[in-house]
Amino acid sequence: MISAQQLDALDPQTRQAMLSLMAEIRAKDALIAQREREAAFKQALIDKLTHEMAVLKRLKFAATSERFAGTLAPEQRSLLEETLDADLAELAREIERERGNTDGKDKTEKKTPKRAPLPPHLPRRDVAHEPVDTSCGCGQPMQRIGEDVAEKLDYQPGVFTVERHVRGKWVCRCCEKLVQAPVPAHVIDKGIPTAGLLAHLLVAKFMDHLPLYRQEYIFERAGHLIARSTPAAWVGECGAQLQPLVQALADELRRHMVLHADETPVAMLKPVNLRDGKTHRAYMWSYCTTSANPTKAVVFEFSETRSGENVREFLRLDSPQAWQGTLVTDGFSGYTATTTKGVTSAQWHGART
Image 1: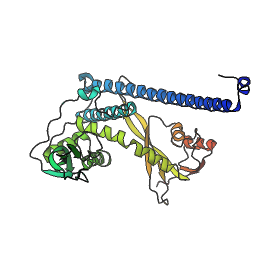
Image 2: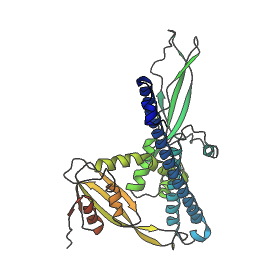
Image 3: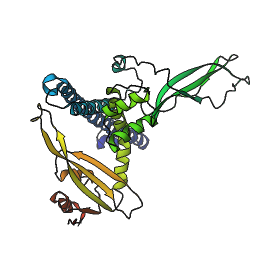
Image 4: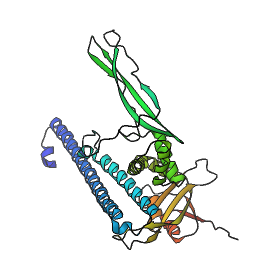
């Protein structure tokens, strides 16, 4: 790096050019350092997700082993298997997102088994996708020479249907120009379920408390059997796709000055290789706006502990974007510890008769 004395020895025009060049070099060095930090963070996240996937795969193989399966009822084993399949699919989608594999030509796709065609007896409904303009730049009208068809499995309560997305191919024979409508966006790229089927699957599982193995029987009676691992993978991918919406909802909650918070215990089964194979107490934390607030929003977070660290992380109390407001709770010490971070604590007490 050139010294200050050497700069002073230069003529004004050369000195100004050198100062501009040095400033540009510093800016590029800062940008490179930032990119390196981002790359290191992404790699650490990928390594973490890869490790979690390896642990889940070990749990899945353990769950299907005769020794472990013999300790569970068939319904419990089905619930555990579908949960593991959903978690594995979600982790795979998150790893793919971090790696930026958008070309769809990675090695994992080659290992995917060929999908069986949808049953021909299901009713079809065509959804046409045509270019907005089918006139060529040369002035000649374009001619339709063919089409691409992608079939999506849809579901209305009690009835399966197939959506046929037909994209016509239009060509100008004069210019040999081909025009076709782009592929519409779907929740799961190259997947067969429509948004309606995925919504029904999630609502039935999480709102109506219908496990996937029961939905499997319902779908079979409706005319189409779906292997249980398939909807489990769909649930996992939906979880990954909905994560930005969850983050946006949490950000919206943190914009309000008064929030309610509460935690409730839930039973969690830990396999033998992680603990003792018995159920243990975990917690579901909930954060919501007040009943008088026109914004009705609730965010749920699962944690294995009842530590107040969960509240501090959700409210970002250890960051420059720390939430400042009134937190209405039941007086649990994990909440009152937030008062040292600038949060006003308000308590409510329930009455039982």
